[in-house]
Image (cartoon, rainbow, N blue to C red):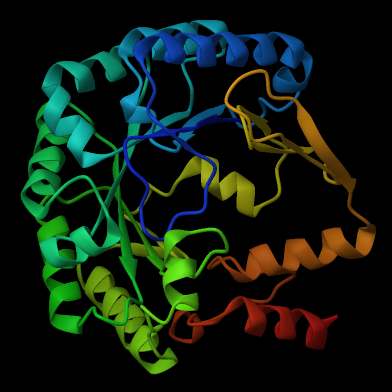
Length: 336
């Protein structure tokens, strides 16, 4: 189970705090690939020890800014395919600009799942988020993916914005459902330290949505996607039956994984978590922690409670799934 972090973006989203850098010149992509291939070689034994779940996920940042030849270098350095699931995250703007040929090139590399950050089909909301695409580009990108032969598409949506009303959210869901993606992720907007949004809140230029507004939007998503035939298998994730994310599901069941690239995290065995430094080239392991038995038990319970499988025989009804991290922590403490 392998994750690769691509630390490049053409612009930074208002809400994002993931490690990324503005896209450099093409030569810098090569330097990034050189560093990544060096890390792959050094950690090959560790990688091969995690292949019980044979998945590859390239995330970011924005992996779709990488040219195909760079992605080919990466996949050729990881001779473990074909993968049960090989996901690449994409921005709609990149898919539209590069066209079907780029998508077909991804498929030739073995990619069998594209996760695309649609986020909204409201141009006003997209502009506020500082996204590079507009609603028309998002729709065209979904069409290009499908027409190019992608049979497993995941679309991301963001809710919980104070300026987002239910009608606008429903129009976004309806627009996405016209493409019938196999998977939909819906994430509530959060204020992350270091993001532009965090500074806006501190400066009084943005007020968070109320709990009532967030709950109403979440319930709208739940009811709309259930009516469309999607399986609500994790708090933030829905899939057509049998199309649940293999890679992410392995995270939630605490299977070991190797994270490659700057800022990436790894889990060795069940108790050793490590992470890489956040630097564009020549990154290294920046830290490591060994989880106690109590920490493993609490994490297992918390992750299980996020899914419809539950944990330790506990199954949470879907109607009660609107819970914050604080409420999950409270459930853990009361059930310990």
